[in-house]
Length: 266
Image (tube, rainbow, N blue to C red):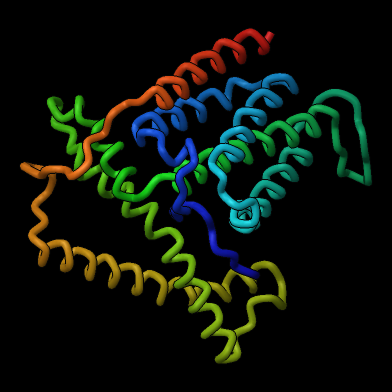
């Protein structure tokens, strides 16, 4: 098993239009866009969504090699999901049959659509973290959750937890790769034997990984306490978030996308 560094949780510095957008506008756009992806049901709707995603990738000016490198682990999951739909979905004409295994027309359609949907969701989510710093992401989440504080929702704490979780994804991934290389240097075999045996061989990786994760969490808590962190009460900000014409245009595009999808669904 080869581990590639994931792009989810990483930030690529830049001055592109997507980088300059208000984090609240980007968060709102991504959340609504992920909902709109589930409205797609034909080639026209998926083509429209793919065009919007491609336009976002071009405007972000993030190097294509970084995006392709981070998609490698996701492609395996997409392939497994597509295979399950090919195998389990029934309906329409039989396109292929080998003994008890039959691939139906509806299974092929579902496999293609689900794979496209999964890919669009991953690309959109990773584009958010690639073009938004963890500080801006935390502040954007906090400002969006601020109206719910009157109902007892800890907006600052929730935003901080989500941003820390995103930030630690690449860190834990790199830690996993180091543990696997150390185990291989000691003679561990992760690639031979049956599937069950290979899954069991990763159990010695999980134990040190959990220990390392808890140690990092403890170190982070001590560092925040040593720096006088007491939550969001009374905190000030160097830079104030403000919606610009670019953000208004992005949200207007989102409304137009919703209307177009609703029309093309029929």
